[in-house]
Amino acid sequence: MKKWRTKNGYHIFRVVTGRSNAYLVSYGGRNILVDTGTSPYYNRLIKNINSIITYSEHIDMIVLTHTHFDHCQNASRLRRDHGSIILASRYESEFAKKGYTPIPKGTWAYSRLISKIGSPIGSSFLGYPLFPIDIEVEDEYAFNDFDLNLKVLSTPGHSAGSISLIVDNEIAVVGDAMFGIFRNSILPPFADDKRKMFESWKKLYATGCRLFLPGHGKNFEKGLIYREMNRFNLEPLKAE
Ligand SMILES: [Zn+2]
Image (cartoon, rainbow, N blue to C red; front, side):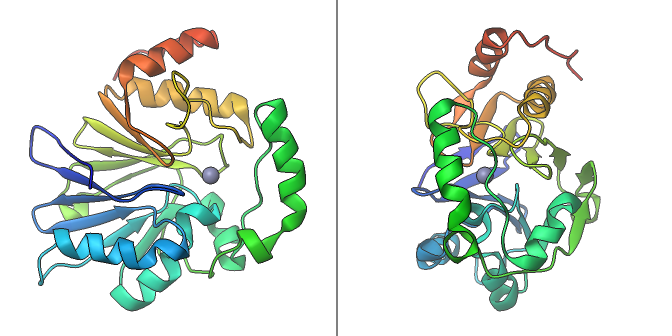
């Protein structure tokens, strides 16, 4: 299992990979799961989490970067069986209630085609067991109640309610706002609003995080985002 550590000792474990990534952020006996993977990966997810957390701990919270099926198919079951509360953007709550989130538009000709073919497939293939969102985030969320140096930022574009988790000001878990599948490119194949997504890249770059963990594929460093911002002529925001 791949893992990372911040200077202050926050650990991040990649507890599911393959179809999509899920990460467990662990610090001081608190455990936050970011995304859940698809239902065929449920047992592996639980096995990996149990190998990390102690007997007296549990998954305190599930942060959903967005509600596409490949990120949230296990959310309902985890909430029921493990008592975890779910945090997501309020812009995803209508979808979560129905158990289906539409596929975004493609960003390239090829993925546009898939988007067209994929959309009519509908909820029977791309759906998920519905769930309530216990904490709906509008723009930002700080984990003051948990006394954790974590922050949720809204990073829309891939979907209207895409969010990212900033861990200890060092590592960003970004969902599908950025992709790690393609060599030398972070552009996701699908996005509801590409312009908003580019704004989110600037926002994430300005956090000062050094490492980025995407919902699909491998982690990458800040330099790649800088190069991608240049490629698309995006002016960096002033760093915070
Ligand atoms: Zn997605």
